[in-house]
Amino acid sequence: MEEIHRILEALQCNDQRSVLATIIHVEGSAYLKEGASMLFLEDGSQIGLLSAGCLEADLAERVPEILETGKACGFVFDMQSLDPISWGDESGCGGVIHVTMEPVDDVFLNHLCALKDYLDHQMKVMIIKKISADRSVSDYAFVAENRQLFGAWRGGISQALLDWTTSKESRRSGIKVISSMQEHVFVHTYDPKPRLVIFGAGQDARPLAAFAAATGFSVIVSDWRPVLCDRYYFPDADTLLLGFPEESVNMIDFTSSDYAVVMTHHFRRDQQLIRFLSERQLCYLGVLGSKHRTARLLNGNPMPVNLHAPVGIAIGAEGPVEIAVSILADLIHTYRINKKREAVTHEAE
Image 1 (cartoon, helix red, strand yellow):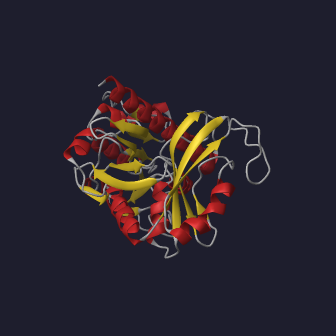
Image 2 (cartoon, rainbow, N blue to C red; image 1 turned 120 degrees about the vertical axis):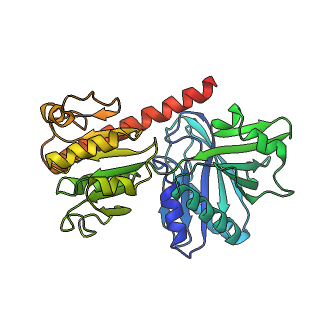
């Protein structure tokens, strides 16, 4: 998942000066593509990655000067070259990577906090950065899914630019040329965290919640048993919901991008949950247990298209941790497939 979420969380709870680095263009192969971000804090700590170690040390050396001048800069790293980069090693990545580094001043910080607020409310946000000849950022604007605008774009955001954000060209991340404005811009759309709702707070739900949160899912854990549905067991979950199936399902405003896994180990509760959740148009509905048990749970009703049962990838998993790994692998696999499908759909439109 995108590191922007961890970056925004860090910015909200940290008062250090910092620099945001973003990949804006890639030629050839690279560890990560356009839109990947990384935060460099004044004390030398870092959040996120832009490569598998090929760029980070070199970029870190540039942070003090950027913090001193307060000016954004652009850099190009030619990983096709056999010449060693700053710390004396060959990169071997094979691509050319264009990176912008922007100091996070008070104005930019406020806009990044606004970005976090929109993402936390499950809304996509497009970032548009005006790119100067030296590949630095001169202006930027955010366009939320509800068409709300914010940012620092001198002269205001024109109608031509706003219209361009709905075009096919704006849907792919990278540097674009807006012909009507004769401007080079970088565009990228930030997606909200994918949301995973785990129904059941038993011991096998604990590693799944922890792994999913570490991977970038927003995790909700729901159970009717307070002794199990406790923050002590789920420190990384965003939300704990205490209630029986009908109560908890109605507490959540489900979307077609949501993932749910049913693992209460209680037959009647699982049956209720499958019935309630089948009425929602979820991206993914997983049920822990054998095919025979799932057939009994369905009680002769047709299997929903989005139902994964048994949940998880078949790796011969044994025990809570291995089962959590198999489920999370299937969640990530489904997430990636859906992202590729969305990209293909946008290209066809």
